[in-house]
Image (cartoon, rainbow, N blue to C red):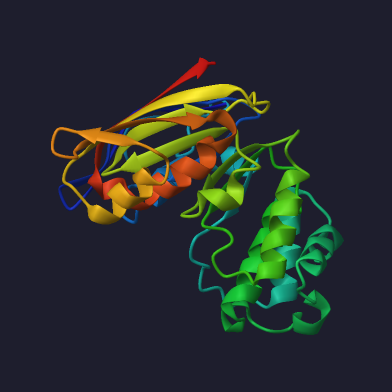
Length: 285
């Protein structure tokens, strides 16, 4: 469905993406995690055809640079930062609906579920909306179409708690008919949705963990973590999982129950800059 082959992106001689090789299949639901500057947003922008790059990117066999209209026609996208559009809300909805072949009322209905009264802001410029209102509208536009791929870059960042819950309920309704890539700092939020976790650090993929939808309660994961340097807060976090250390507290080993995998990765992802290597090996016990 989506392929990245030796993808390299450089800004001012700095490699932001460093030889990414990644295949994402139809129906996979990806949690894309990593610290700020890891390369998550740049990877997404290359997927959308917004950047030039070295290497190869294809979506359903099409290059997003040379076939951008066709590729974007199958992608529902929610950006991390709302664009500075001066278009009135009503006009934006009508324009977006016409581009993707959906009905404006479908976008209205999803916005309503998120707590946004579109009728009350029809004539207001998008750029003058609050951060939360912009995010709800962008989500409604992305989900108000039959896109085969949903790409979301920190989509819940500006949502209030109630809208956040409804948003993830809306995504859950699409589990059977869409491939998802969700970039998030909070793995705990998306753990119930995803079946694969990809962690990036310094432009590379440092973890690619497929999670079975029916993880057995008896499954155990042998985990080994190698640190670049010792950090007391991280040691305390691992101690809570009954990990043991050696080599001057730079190598940590332990076991995790299968159903706790995503919760554990969510904790570890806060310390990405410290980690030199991480391995998870699943064994039935």
